[in-house]
Length: 219
Image (cartoon, rainbow, N blue to C red; front, side):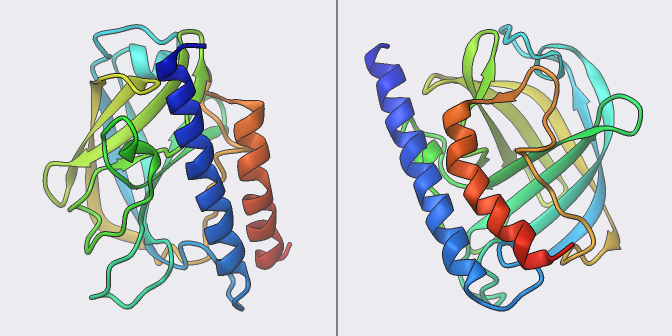
């Protein structure tokens, strides 16, 4: 394992621990959705042109178009004018009635800041990343979303702590289809896109957080 791999693993592990701690604090309060309690559901379209590199994950490498379900949210549920950790969740249809969930949170794009949760005053003012990497045939890959304006975002991927490769554009339809508070629960552990697998150590970091969140919601 090289220096870049070690740095990325250390940073992403720290990011996962922060995520776990934030979820434990959030689940201490009585709420149907302890983490990301405030949000809205909208429709969206992802137009993929493919990246300038190959990851082995078809959704990143190949051109295509997907009608997606999008949830915009505030992780801590702070008042509207207060800084918060913002979240962007995408539900992407795969085959039949199956789908994959991708979750992004406000961070940075640097070698270390892409693994660091960062408060912001709006969803559109900060980059967002998946915080933890996915396993692909090309190795560890992070995903990012950067808003161009309030209705469009550019999606990109990066190998470990390397440069970002743009591969798609997300367009939002602001005709809300739900309040997003309890009606849909996104789960990146159970619902993955083909070719984007969770590392076992990522599952160990994330699973306690999502187990707590599932329990708080009830059956």
